[in-house]
Length: 312
Image 1: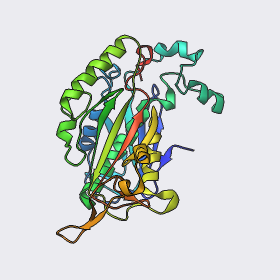
Image 2 (image 1 turned 180 degrees about the vertical axis):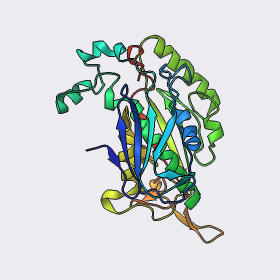
Image 3 (image 1 turned 90 degrees about the horizontal axis):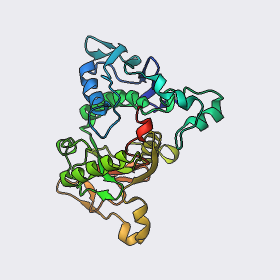
């Protein structure tokens, strides 16, 4: 219940923050896709805790194990199970949380729903749940790249009132990875880091905005009405811990424009492809992609945990 996402490519994540491990079961991956634990590990290393001074200090190698669905370096078309064992478990650090609810955490709501909760590090609501998403995403990204040459890039656009200047049409992964806050605007990234450290020393936390760009998205992807592409994307990103807002294209800013100002005018390019002069709709209209670029924003309620509860 509530742990499965997707239809044709379906994932089910499992595990708790300080349990034996976390991971994912992937169903619907086509056979004969070349994949290795090393490829998945590259993506897991990007999210691994303890890499910099602005992330949780928890020390985890996050080494993945492929338990099923892959043979001799190729997928079998059967369910793929990936496990990451928890090593740096310190449940004693959360003894106080067994009797006290943390503000703005899931402690009280999990108790209200189930009458029982794993209070060690947040249990199922911990950000370590995202390990399964990242592992599955590594495989999904490879499928999209091979089938349609789709490129997906996400980056930090804003921390509190510091906003980087980023062109979604030209931003590269190398620019994103150039600093520990992963803001392609290097100068703004340095100021973001300083602000996060300053707030952290005060035992407080701040939020930010992550922007995601998808290039070469095939036209017609998605389904009508309830399964529109932006609806599926919204559900995926809004189920992430600390997510508090979602925009696509011009987002809420589009409400400040008239219809004529906001419309994306069509034209035919030199190859005969129908395109739009602007991208205020975010590359999606009626639930289907219209362009080979789209972008969305994810608003986070915090960039780092309170000092007392930074151990995810």
